Image 1 (cartoon, helix red, strand yellow):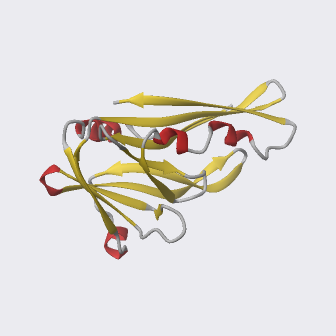
Image 2: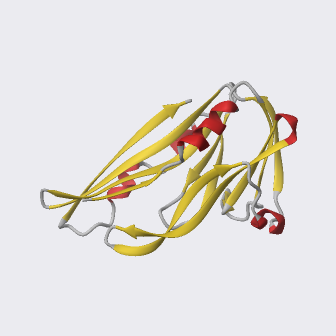
Length: 183
């Protein structure tokens, strides 16, 4: 069985946890043309004018038996050169973060009775601002797009976990469970 873990790392979740009780001034993203997505990065401005970055870059991974470019998220204070080439739009928030949820999925693939893959992936991050939420969702395995959601009960707007099982060969059985980790 092949195990793959592309969840946010513990040090990245520690950074996010430190945001609770602090004010999010704004977040920056690509201009929304047809869908509310930002390519490869979003920036979050916190108290003290500190900026943090959510990146979604592809790297070659085993995608269920085939090497493919798979989008992997990272969350850091490090400003990579790509940020200087973006024409970000700033969306003001100016509210205190009450809580943060990290949405993770465990995706399993079986051939017959044998489990061939056990994959963990961060599907999204939801910032609870008390009266509303802001969420960033990982679109699909291959996409570097970060979907931006605003409103209420945003987890209900995420692609359903069952979507993982669509379009597989009938000789393959899939399972996908979603876990919500509250920081």
